[in-house]
Length: 113
Length: 113
Image (cartoon, rainbow over all chains, first blue to last red):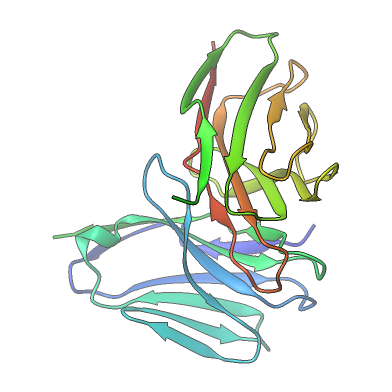
């Protein structure tokens, strides 16, 4: 089974601070790494994703960085806002024929005002 | 509006009973997935289907069954053989295109009494 190890399990950050979530993976067969954001009681929604041909992708205050040699990727949330308080999941694609994903364990982020 | 619907939102069942969770999508997506989410944990794949009348077991299929008779529907049955069925169940779908995101439904919270 393809594993994705996510850390930390939870973090608290002050408004305006930077939230950093890290993920490590095994194998490099199928490289597509999405991040999902989930609010309590809701289904996850795609936040941002990175493909293997780039090392960094930025969308607004959210940035993914990808280190292929270290088999690690991370999410940075700049200028964190209380509305960013949610659970974040990293994932990786695990089959070449479709879009089957393996998810990390999740990080609960709390942004204090 | 296009999207994924899951019903019911909350479901209670007695031990020893089978129960079926509904998942419908009008996005014309080929692939559909069922995940289980436990408190503080990531999403674990139960079953997935890439085409009508075909489906594959995920990582935790024991005690569950599915059918895919129509493109837009992918119901999940939680059988009495599932030893610990209380969880949040999420349905997702995506078109069969490389690097395409999975869209999630709002989830069904199942509680066994």
